Image (cartoon, rainbow, N blue to C red; front, side):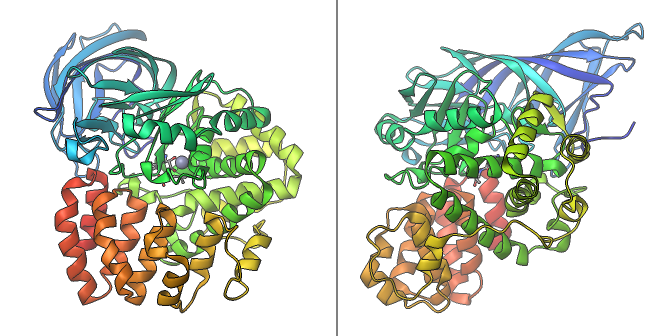
Length: 560
Ligand code: BES
Ligand code: ZN
């Protein structure tokens, strides 16, 4: 039988897992999760259930005739082959229970020491399962083409609270809607909660939670905005969890509980497009899911499209335009450095780690394609299509071909989809975004910047070809910026131009933030000169232990 997902050893066509019951003990002393998972599955004629694992120790398997771990693959981990008591050949439901422990260096877990938290008193743990790291903390069919419901019982040391992307009842959790394994999520630490609206709130460390609730206070308006366009929010509550700064991503759309970096807490809501983005995944991604990581653009391209629509509705058209232009420019910048094969929407990831497909191409080229279709057929028709798309494929995992067939049937159009999806670069006729505000920013040295938004600052800085760093710093105090995006842009320019007062800030920045999007460009830029290399190595030797395993792997590849 043909393997649909090259990143999973499981064979869901032969035995398909439907439900998990987790029972886990969070052990900060050993940096391990210890416990069991009971898997309920549909079996056909095969007498074997294959699960994905990575660095798991399997102690025993109940209700099985035997088990063995296959050889470990560097990117994919080791398949767990479970021999089932022979069936009578008729399809039926069955179960096994796997007793296991995780490894202290599990790729999907980050164990933080108290100094790495805001409060400095308690340790912290969080999971990051996307793309294929769920297997490092649960033996599962770790492919987005398989959806499961689950329950979980989680034991934590006293005083530390566990949260999951699920219905929460104290230390018991329940997810009744079928989700792919990459959306299973757990965190534990000294967490407080603040409600923001009837169905939304924030979890964070006590010293952060108030600030976070202020920053994210437009969440309910964002939920309503998407509902008006694309149908009801189907997951009950929508909460956010603000993680310590080592979180390697901006955000992660775990169902009912988006995980976010604290670096978006700018104090002025200027970076909340991240909330719009992760929330939009409640439709594009969590409801309608990419069936394989080659179809990742179905998750991210649709999400960036919806994110921008939210920004327009909740904030303003100029705000949307600025974000769209920033994204468009970043796409060109990144694409210039990518091999042709990675400039297509439908990626070939055979033999590669799916994380390698996570460039701006699925995000920004994907969103630009949808915008182009919208312009061609008109907004009303496109919104009607999108709404029916989310209903039609709700709680399913689909491929690019499924999308194309549905689009052809429901919304005939003359966009060259073949070129967009299978050929490199942006085809002619794209609906290019434009921002009047940015045109003003481009017209020489600014007379009055008092009303500038973060987006205008970012565009202004990126637009400088030969920046007068000293003058910029003197007039605008950029080395002291408390906005993470502006500071990051400034530090990057400081490395490029050898601007000493900026370069001096880099160590502090790289040692306090673990967001990969910030780390990667700065380390890469540093590595371009001998002095920079020395500085990169010195800083990385201090900072590495504080980074998430995913970020460590990325930066190892740059600084090595
Ligand atoms: N789902 C992604 C994060 C992700 C992608 C994790 C691939 C692991 C593998 C999330 O929705 C996302 O796109 N986050 C972005 C922020 C967003 C505003 C573009 C990020 O983390 O930078
Ligand atoms: Zn996303």
